[in-house]
Structure formats: structure tokens, C-alpha cells
Length: 113
Length: 240
Image (cartoon, rainbow over all chains, first blue to last red; front, side):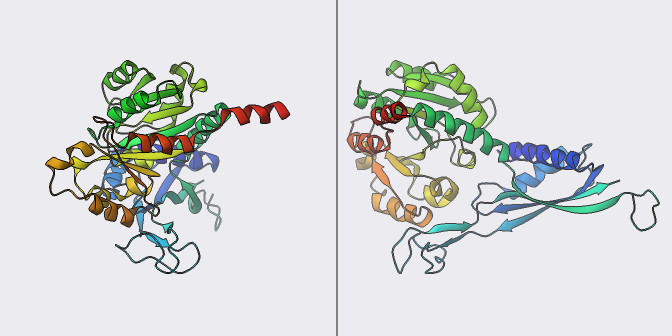
């Protein structure tokens, strides 16, 4: 249930970004969560809804973009098929994680005077 | 103010940030990392389910090293000091980090724990025994050199597939309680290895039994490779 502490960190970041730009309110929050980031997006949403009441985010819906996991050969022999061992079938080098571990605040829509 | 007519209405602007949400934790972790490097302490984040045998592995590690290495432990626990007490009884320096309801350690908790772990700068190894949990601890970088995951043979062969985040981040999987294998006819080490290879890019596995001591020598050898050479470090500092 670390989603609650992630939402707390998210709010700290949003407040800082809003303050730095003199915003009076936040109108949209966009985050990216990778499929193996270890974050449950349903729980994240529940935590966000709970926290946002009577804050600068009161009117800001949370948009979550899920990022699929992608492993590939570090020598450019292409992606590893899902469910296969994480080594390159051509050169046997250990695969590199290209995407799927994101826990990122991507974009805000800020209401500025 | 509204740019079109100057009516005083506010307007909405998109702001691209692309920042990691745990950036504050990452900063605290980098701070820990600098401390570990300066003190030449190898820091190991030891994770695993409740009951995987993390504390027993630390007790066996203490027995195997004897006086050959200085080992200290920060033991994360929800509510008790039991793990730290067990570890101290085994002859290691240890402090608890009681997390209350938090299901994981974060970098700031480790930093505060270091303040209470007297003499930690003299250690060769600092084990950070994380809260027993196969999900949350994997998300928080603490400043460690390596992640070690304890997986006991009684937990089932498919744990790596169920908790890919945890195993993807592991530098080593310690398969524990192997003395119980004769009682578990359906558990095959080869299946655990195959499952690990699907979630870990360079799977490393060492089989151990803290109860009988089997395999502990391999674990100690792995730790020896990790060790930051103190003697040569002194020479470098002297040369400056």
C-alpha cells in the first residue's frame, strides 16, 4: 500500500510546481505508470481521490497512462518476446529494460491569473 | 489575466514536467550513497516475504564471518524490535527502524537509522533488512550497492512471476531453507531458475540453508567480491 506515500510525494511535487508558476489551481494531472513499476494504478487513483479534496487539485482529474514493459537486446538485436528469458536470442547478452518502470509526473494543467 | 481581452479571467496552461514522482526519495538515497562510498561500506538491501528467512540469513552470515568482517544491520520492522534483538544476540551491531504502518523503508528512514547505528562508518557491510514484503520495498531506492532477495523454497516456484518488479531489481536471489527440500517433493530448483530468467536479465541464485549452514560459503564468497577494499582506499587518500 505504498500508493498513499507515492500520492503524498506527487502532491508535494504539484504544490511546488504550482507555487513556482504562481498558479491558483490545478486543472489536470497526467502521470505515467509502468507495468512493472510496482504501483497499482487503481490504488493510486483511490489515494489521489482521497487526498485531493480541499487542495489545489480539487478540480484536477488524474490521468494515468500505463506504459507497457519492453526489454531489448543492448546490442540492437531487437526486443525480447514477452514471457521469454531475458537474454538476447541472437547474442545471449542480458536484456535491457527499455520501458515499463516509470513512476513519472508527466504534465500539469495549471490555472494562472 | 486573459490574454485575448484583458477581462481578468485566469487561463489554463499546460506545463510539461516529466519528473520522477519519487525524486525526493531518490535525492535522499543519493545522499546515503555518498555516505556509504565515503565510509567504504558495502550496503546491501535485503528484501523478501515475511518469513523468507532474512534474519536467519543474517545470523548465519555473522557466524560464518566471525571476526573476518565487520557487519552491521538496520532492521526494518512494522511494530517490533525482535529482528534487531536476534541480530545483536548473534554478535552484530543492529538497530531497528520501526515503520509503524509503512510497508517499506525509504531513503530518509535509512538516513535517520544511520544516525542511531553507532560506529556504522567502521563497518565492511551494512545490511538494510527491509520490511517483509515482495511489492513495496522494490519501489524505493535507499542508496544501496546491491539488492538481494531472499526466497524460501516453501514459498512456491512461481513467486518471481507473481512479483516481477522485486525480482527484476535483484542482483542476487538467495534461495533459502533448502534443508526443507526433501519434504517438498513438488518444488524444483530448476523451475525457480527458469521463472527467474523470465523476470531477471542476469539471474544469479545461491542456494542456502541458515539452519545447516549449507551454501553459506558461496554466499560469503559473493559478499567478499562486493567488499570495498579499505587498505587500497587508504593509500589513495594518502596520495592526495
